[in-house]
Length: 385
Image 1 (cartoon, rainbow, N blue to C red):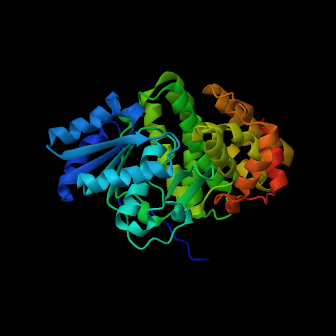
Image 2 (image 1 turned 135 degrees about the vertical axis):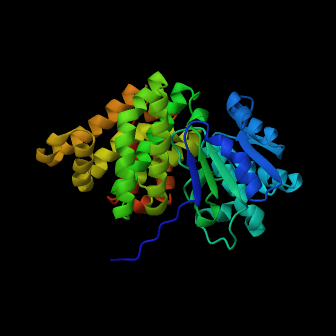
């Protein structure tokens, strides 16, 4: 058996109201001042106020950096680094979705590895020397799992690409998955981030590097998402939201260690070029790419189908397996109100070659179970149009 490595955070809390442990954890760890990283749309809401209240009630000093964009940029991170330096903070608390937590990760890494201030040099598998500045993450969406992964994604606006930075030094020391912070998500964001979590789980389950431990995480996440996403989105059912909070975290435990595939390679380009929200881009592309990957992954699809209520999948043919699996994904998307296509992101056919060239260089591509060429990417974008 080959040697396998798994990296996870040291401590995580789950459940409605879990944010209340934040003050005790900060004090017990000896931290004196917080840089609270979030985005402007959240900053003025009750969601961030609930976290601020915990800090204020415990007389913990903090400063806010809330200039994070939906697809955070190099400048976002560099501005946050300057704010962090000037604040005198000794711990970062990130509140938000993947964008806020990813920005906080970039700040954390450069605070202890100042030679990487350019940010661009962090793209891909990083070789930073020092563990990042202590980071505590409180996710507000049930999708990205940034609070448990060793990845963060930053847009290089000069090159119109999304950099996927992979670095065990960036993992938060503490994750607080408080589903009360997720409960007020707008329906569209709840839906797209939930489909992001499903994409993580499915791509992680079929990626070349999958192993026994990652399979366990990904399969359970897939089951929970199919069972709970519609109720979490459409009914704001608290039990379903609790289970989605857990599902996205479990998926993150897996894919952070084994990688993803070309749904992400393609989605990253839609985000970088057209500013498409990442979860929505994944949801749009997932059925098309799974039909393509089904040629080599259909037996893995059979296993998934049998775990989500299609026991008859044991007897279906290869093509029926692929068709049924793609149909199940499409129906779940529709059930939570996602019906867009690549065309709705602003993409045009004349852009496909440019998008394909960028996707060929994406760090998620090597993990895909089926080999893919530039021409294949062009055709996949066309099919998803």
